[in-house]
Image (cartoon, rainbow, N blue to C red; front, side, top):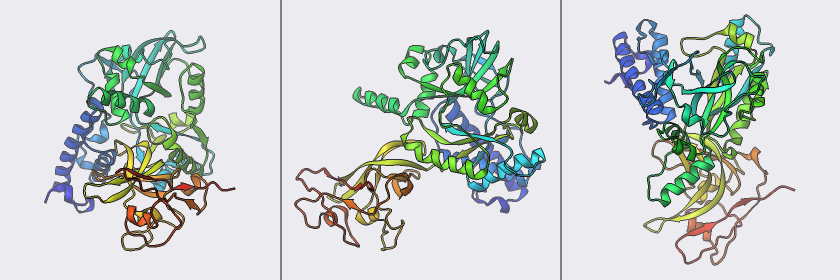
Length: 469
């Protein structure tokens, strides 16, 4: 039996050693594909699962931790295409959390390390985790002198010429700025610019791009800065490296200083004091995700006090005072813009949701199958209810979309709190008494509806959630 099929608690010490070797090799290969070549071969969920398995085995067999362990490494070696830049302070990664329990454990660990009771006296910041390319921009005497990618955390790639083409990033800082400062943040491509670029590539008969993150990374690694300039890249500042004089004593204050220097900062960043507030903001950002013009894959929490950050310190590759709360990698919130009827080769008619573009599992999703009329109503193949009453899918709804592997994306549920909550609906019907049955398949309950059935092969039906008065 292959060691990858054995549960962690069932591994022998020999199996564990072999599995850690396999995981080190597999994770290193995927780090290089993602960070070095901007062409990931697996989804974020699959990568996170590899990392979690490695961490679990190391926790059970600490004596087997390898020198090349993924737990000791950040990113990938910098490309030989660009000159190397040694970071004055390492660019470390963040530990990930995936559940409410994980977040509670993170907050509790902060209090425990500091020897305090969990009395909500410690403030945290929470901000969207931008799905882009990490960047460190160095200023000396308030002028930009270099810009480097994360690389392996110690050494990055010199992309100064390309960073200078990003209009949002200041070339010089105001007189109030320190003599030396490294401003760190994320370079990204707006979703609207990504869709426009793909439309242009398609019109020119060229291959389109997979997602904004990889496109931004590839655009930044162009040898010709003119190509980078044409891609309209953007930037959010949220951290710093070497700095000769601290202008604030809090994380939130530092980001406000960056804003005053002319850097774009994320407007959804908040200061919070309790786990309940942190999780509420995580949910709020998740609901806003489809309307943001940039991809995010979670929310980052940091201890706000820089004094407490210094006391908490670092593990081998990550700070104790911060964590990234990831969204489910194969799920996302988005909005139903329309519902069309798709005609298959055999003449079968299937309702399809046209969605506000959202990146799910590393792919930009714009459509999702609704299967049939029962599924729209929230009823499964055997007549069982698969969603709460009233959670029928309508145009304008915020919905949870799932994409797993190569399976066609599907709408899982409706987020009722995001819009008007009313059971009433209107569907136009012409030329067909039971058009819903004809178009969408089996119906298990009647509902006032009408769908236009033109002679053309493409049929469109509109189901709108009515505003409450």
